[in-house]
Amino acid sequence: MSKKVILLFGGSSEERLVSVASAQNLAAQYTFSELIFQDQKEALYKVSSEELFAHQNVFVSEFKPKEKSFAANLQAAVDFLKDKTVFMGFHGSQGENGEVQSLFESHRIAFTGSGSAASRTAFEKNLGKDVMSNTGHLMAEEIKFNISDIAGTVPKFEKFFQKHKKIVIKPTSSGSSFGLHIVESQEHLAKVLEEIKTSQFPVYLMENFIKGRELTVGVTQIGNDLVALPASEVVVNEGRSFDYNGKYLGTGTKEITPAQLSDTELAAAQKLAVEAHLAFHCYGYSRTDMILAAEGPYFLETNTLPGLSKPSFIPQQLLAADIPVKNFIEEQIKLAECRYEAQEV
Image (tube, rainbow, N blue to C red; front, side, top):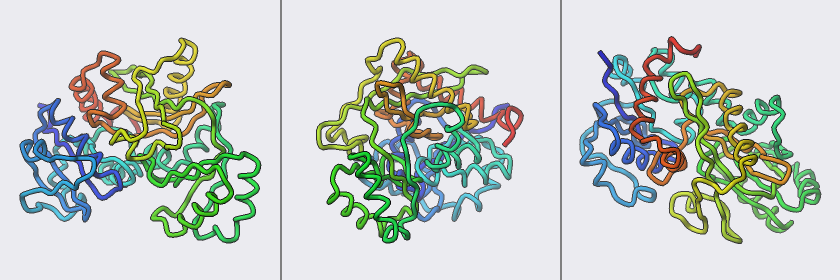
């Protein structure tokens, strides 16, 4: 007899609103036994589908459950979760840094998506690049730094900017382009460095800007096979960056799925996505972001719990591949239920 399957969403991360949007889409495609919401303070609530679907302006307004909390946090809910399968609807730091996965692994709770080791490594962008450095794929030059060290490292940053003329500054551990800056002048560099001194993110990467087409490619496991999904392209308007508003509110950006690529370009992009999935030891599904330059695709990062809201890339790519979202959900649940037999965690 199959276990009850619960959808866990919300959470305390900067991507908690995206998580609620994913939950709305997932719950519309599949009937979960229970919907469990976690608030910013980590308390857990049982939520009805009617309550979830009634929530409006999901990408900008907080979801507030009607009923009282039944557990203070996930640790307190372990006994409740032990005999169930958890579909992971979390995104961002809490969902992708490996902490929740580690808790579930320690109690052998079945859950969807990658394990704690893969999640932790992929979420820290500098660690992810270290993993990918052994694959032979192209990557941007970088400087890793702590915001507490900025004052003493400004000359190094200025030299890096003078060399490349256009650079990207981003946190090592964030999603949905939170904290991303594209710098094209010495004055802007000074302003950004001053601004991030008080950032919630302690560690940043400075990279040379790669000129090319911004692509993202999902990978999903179907049975024993890994399937690379059609690529998506992000076209950003002049003077804009692909930030949160661009991703979820459509401000200054356009998403094209499937991306209009030659067979050679698509094969190279999908090869990178599959090899990144394997290099990180991802499980179930993943999505890899890249820049397609004249010399080939540059690896940016791999997302172990990418967004599953209706406008998110994975659902777009599943549609383009003629794979129903419900089939995707069911396949992930099957993988979750045999994860401790199928992989070392």
